[in-house]
Amino acid sequence: MTIDEATTFLVYVQIPIKDVLLNNPVNTNNHFLNTLLIRLSTWILGDSDFSVRLPALIGHLLYIVFSFKLIRAISNQTIVIICGIVLLHLNPYFMDFFGLARGYGLSWGLMMASMYYLYRYLEERKNNYINWSFVFAGLSVYSILIGLNYFLALIVAFNPVSYTH
Image (cartoon, rainbow, N blue to C red; front, top):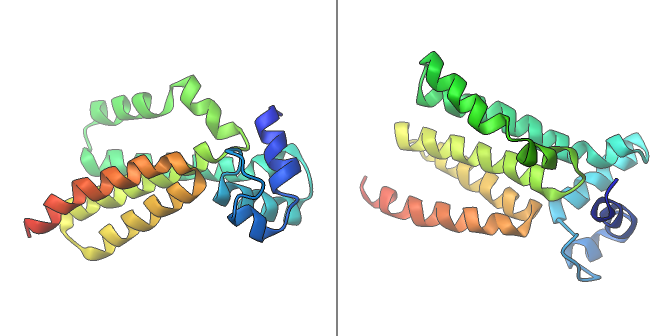
């Protein structure tokens, strides 16, 4: 377990939820949603490496499911699907984050879900899809604050599209 993972568990998972949400004590190791989910998983499963890393694994599952759905929605050509899988799933440095008790993996899984629903909205123009896109993007930000970059890009990209219809 890395020092960042241990800090998250030993400091933020142990303090009152109010302090987690207020980031007290102030530290960038507090990835709010990830911290709350670690708290829940350790409460249910007990303290173990697995239960501490379970939220990141859930993020990886989201990433896998929604990346496959997005690739299939874009194309059903075998070569496009294979290239998409290779590009999205075989970078060892990127994939390493899905095994750490940090908010990155959870955030990326939620971002992928958001991208999938954005694509579905662009294809079908159903408001339900864009609503889900923004919900997942917001949860991504709550998983790690750097997700705000994606959220703002989503807003910027969505505004011109929303005025064309």
